[in-house]
Image (cartoon, rainbow, N blue to C red):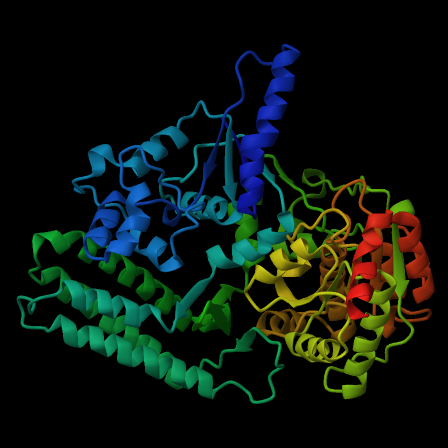
Length: 601
C-alpha cells in the first residue's frame, strides 16, 4: 500500500514530487536498497482540473480573445491541471473546471483526460500519494460515512505543515452558506430552464424565491452584528435568532421544491448535464442549511471575504465536538501517522495541538512527540532587538502610532533598509505607512494590501526596500538572502476575539486558565511563524526586532517568548543593530545607502 504525504501548500507538494522523492529514489537505487524508482502522484480536488465538456461549452459561448487564451488547453494531449494556468482568470477557471459529480453518460467520458488522470492516480503500485490536508480529510470523511474513498488504502500518513491541519479540519467538517451561492445557482437554473414542470410549478419563481430568502437571511445576520466589534475582526458572532432560523427553514423547503420541480421539468438534451450539476449543488446547499439550523451543536459565525474586487459574506459553522470526530474518524484507525511542522508547539509543549486535534484522547503509549533544534545557527547569525522606546500597545492612541513609526525609522536606518515590518492590524499598518511616507526615507517603501502579493515581488526586486505587511507575510513567504535582513514585529500576535475563542473560553474555569491553555500558546506559535520569515537558509544573517513593551525586562511574556524563540543574543540598542549589520553584511549590501545619499544631494 502507498504512503500518503499531506501538506498545506501546492509549492511543497510539487517540490516533494519533482525534487525530494526523486532524490531519495536515486540514493536508494544507488545503494541497492530498492530495484525500481519510487513513484509519486499529486492528488487534489476536481476543481483543479479541466473538464473537456465544460471547456468546449464555455469556449463556444465566449469571445475571440478568451478563445485564444483557452486554445492551449483544447487538444487531446493538452494539460488539464489548472494550477499553473496563469493566463486564465479565476472566473475562467471556475467556468471550465470539473464541477460537481461527473455525469456517467457524458459523451466525453471514454476519452476524458480527467478520468485518465484518476486511473493513473488510483493505481495501487504508486508509492506516494501526495495531497493537501483538505483532500486527505475529505477522504477520511468518505471512509467514516461508508462512501468510496478518494485515496487508495494506505499504510502510513505523513502530515507536513501540520500547524495548518486544524484549519483544514474546520473547513471539511464545517458548514457554510455564502450570500452569492443561491443567487449564482438561481442564475444557472434560469439559464437552462425553458418551461414549467408537469404539475405546473414554475421553476423560475422558485429560483427567485431562493434569492429573496437568501437576501433576507444575510440582511438579518448583518443587522445582528454588534456595533463594537473589533475593526480587525474577520469573524463576527452570528446571532441565530428566530428570524434567521425561519429564513434557513424556508430556504431548505424551497430548495426541496425546486429540486422536485426541476427534475420533472422538460429541458433540452444539451442542458441535462447543467441541470444535473445544478441539482447536485442545490442538494449540497440544502444539506448545509439543514446543518446550520441545528446551531446548538455548532459554533456559528459570519465571515467577510474579498477576492479582487468581489466581496462576499459567509455564514459558517464548525461542530463543537470537532476534536472528538477527528479522534473517531482518524486517530483511532490504527494506521501510523506522523505530524510534523516547524511551528507545531509553543516552547516544545504540544498540549494545545493535542487538545484541539483530539490527539489527547489517545492512550499515552500510542502517542509520542519530539522537538528538534533548528539547523540554522541563530546564535551566530541573528540578533534579537527588544524595544524600550514604544509605549504599551494601544491601536487607538496616536502617540503609540507615532512611537511605532519613530522606532521603525530608527531601525531601518540602522539596517540600511532590507526590512519587513509585520503588523497584526491593517489599520495601524496604514497609519504607520502614511507617517513613514511623509518622512521621505532613503529606501523604497511598500505596503502589502489585504489579499495581495504584488508588493512582496516588488520588495524582493528592490534589494533594499522596506515592506509593511500583515496577514500573508506571517507565514509561508520565503525571502532568502540579504533582501530581508531586518524583521520588525510590531506587536505580539494575540488572536482577535472571535466566536471560536468565545466558545473555548466558556469551557474554561476562568480567564487565567483560558490564557494559559489557548491565548498564550496560540500567540507563541504565531510569533514563531513570523520570526521564521527572517532566516531561510544556512548563510542568512539578520535582526529580529519586537516593539512590544510586554516582552521587555520584567514584562509578563518575556520568559515565554524567549523560551519559544531560537536562542540568540539580545539587545535593546539600535546602535548594536547597526554594528551587527556592519559585521555580518558584505560591502555591496550598503551600496543602496550610498546611492540614495548621492541622489538626495
